[in-house]
Image 1 (cartoon, one colour):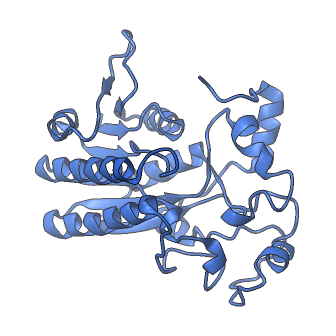
Image 2 (spheres, one colour):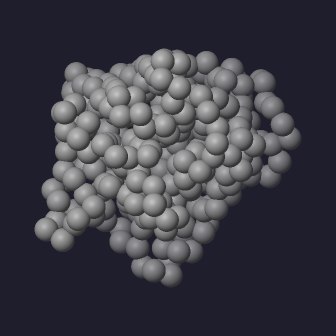
Image 3 (tube, rainbow, N blue to C red):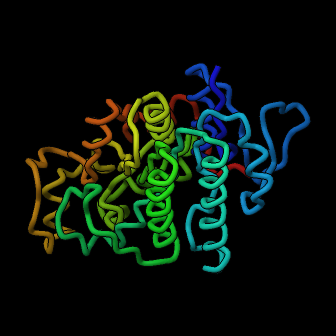
Amino acid sequence: MKKVVVTGAKGGTGLSIVRVLREAGYYVLGVDLKPCGFWEQDYRQLNLEDGAGVYDVLAGADAVVHFGSLPNDTWTPWETTYRNLSLGGYHILQAAANLRIPRVVLASSPMIYGEYRRASYLPIDEEAPACPDGIYGAVKQNLETLAQHYVRWNGMAIAALRPQRIVYEGSYEWRFRKFTVNDAAAANSIWSYVDARDVATACLAWLQSDRTGFEVFNVAADDVCVTTPTRNLLANYYPQVSDLRGELANRVGLVSCEKLKQMLGWRPVYTWQKMAAESEKLGFSNSPPT
């Protein structure tokens, strides 16, 4: 059984990644800042700024999925964000290289693209120019570049995923419903989103593939998160973007995942309508977990 270390294992997305990988037959060692329960045998509490600790927990791994970082630069000073993202990411890459771990998935970010209102074309794909508006997107861009060098230096296989707004399992009511109720609510994110379970299967697709080198992938649902047709949304909110590519029929999404689909055979499964139905059936809470 292959061993995968998942950082950020107790985060909203990490919980789904751990479960999906275990269901696929991997032995998963979870890593997070959150304390370890006395019953947890396959988990380590660790600050990824501790390079020696990272080296220790990665020992013996066949792959690493790195989602252990701050989610944005809103709640902390930029210096804190920079250290968390850059040092943690560097320690993961360096330990993986030294330990000859061949496959790595990095959580990158669509913040690399910057403000979508400046987009030169839509739907946006991985070739769109990087223009981050803050330290978070800038450091994620730097980590992608660093990962390319590690591939060149060490022959590793690294995928950087750029997931859109992630909806965690069970979080639809408190995290996402508000973006589906009117067209303006999610206009700044071009109405894009992705379920954490679909992010998890994207990680799995890279781990199970025989692709080599470095690749970056958008990860998003196939549709927009409102009932208004996509071309109407663009006419109302993005009239300045004249280069519209493809038919954009019905409610097609404005973040292209064709590269991920073509290279790895990945497909998103969860739509926001499916999440809403799941929420109604299971009675999801309106409040975030404490």
